[in-house]
Amino acid sequence: MELIASFSVDHTKIVPGIFVSREDNVGDSMVTTYDIRVTRPNREPAIDVAAMHTLEHIIATFLRNDTDWKDDIIYWGPMGCLTGFYLILKGNRSPKDIYGLILKAFESVKSAESVPGATPENCGHYLMHNLEMAKWYAAKFANYLISNSENDEIFLYPKTERLIMDDNQKFYDS
Image (tube, rainbow, N blue to C red; front, side, top):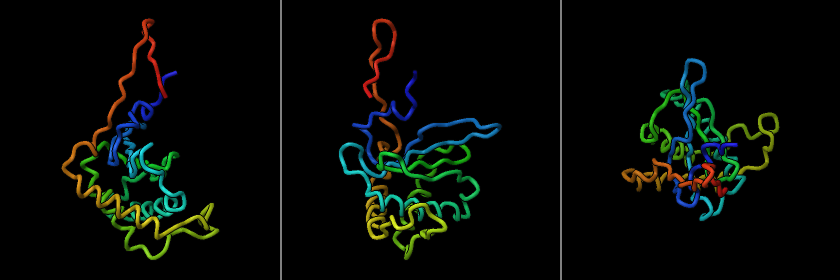
């Protein structure tokens, strides 16, 4: 069985940033999944789960209301490892092309006074939010993006070299 594409990324080398995770043809359209990596895997702590939940709500609301992008947004949600988010967009833009959108989305968190959709009717775990911690993570990531905007490392996945066995099978160390 082949490993999925995201497992071919060397998680010991990836830094926070904006990466293309995969591109898919769906019917007559192209969709792109982006890895929005907020913390460094296996080196920094995962994002606090309540803050992650809050970031999901605030940024999803921002993205689906941004007049320039809302028609292209398909999905925004957290990674299971709690080190970042996945964004799925119509089309196939480069990570640099969506840099401004991601920066605006994370900067929008600082002005949030409440968490959209944090009611029992709208959310499956409405009490699990932490707005202040979400603001801290969002500001940290936005500042990181600004100070590294000229660094290509935040836009290119580091790939893992895979050992090929004598019988031509790939060795997977995951």
